[in-house]
Image (cartoon, rainbow, N blue to C red; front, side, top):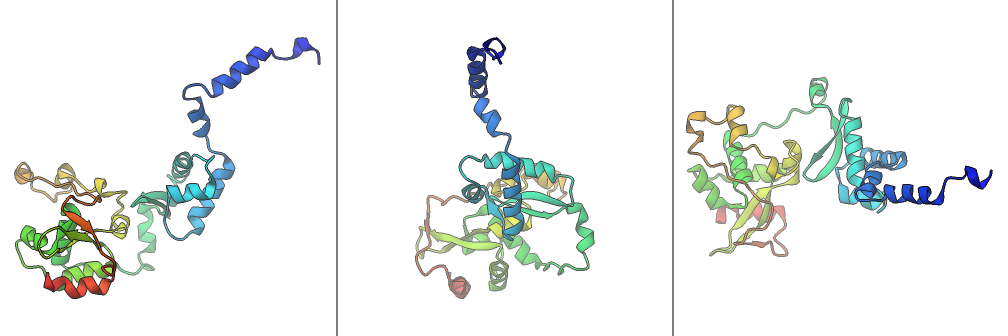
Length: 243
């Protein structure tokens, strides 16, 4: 091959520069390799437990754009019997929602919570961090030990910390299991006022006077972390009636 047939050096350099010009590197990284997608797919299937993007990135290596891999897999499985979903900041494969009837006979019937427990769960979800006394004040009735014990046993609520007030009462919040159960990626995905009205759970005539709180997973300014030894489930149950 003669020099006349070779592409000019300047043209070759221009192509290289174009590939990594402003936004070019991101465009290249946005196309994950087939090997990276296969590896991520295997990790998500074989792990058994939901996996965070950070943990997935540690397995795949720093050269892999984990977000692009997850979005590619999510799109690939969007119309399949198994779908990739995010809940509580972690990713997992699960059966498509419209196929739930296929498992009706083989799945264990979900536990039906008593009305008091459901109300308590709603208060914790929307008002967290919240203490036992605050739950009672919001609901307007005394909180039974059974409701809190049941929600702790299921794992939908968790002790978060202690309020910096006399007696240092425990504060409670929802757990990752709660987010997963209700298909929420984070607390920000909790239904707002408009969503509640659309679902028929809020009277439109009274909605204007109702302020739906926005909970937070961050430690509140008047809240402190749990101390060593505060993490035993029996501790929380045994001391619920003392607070």
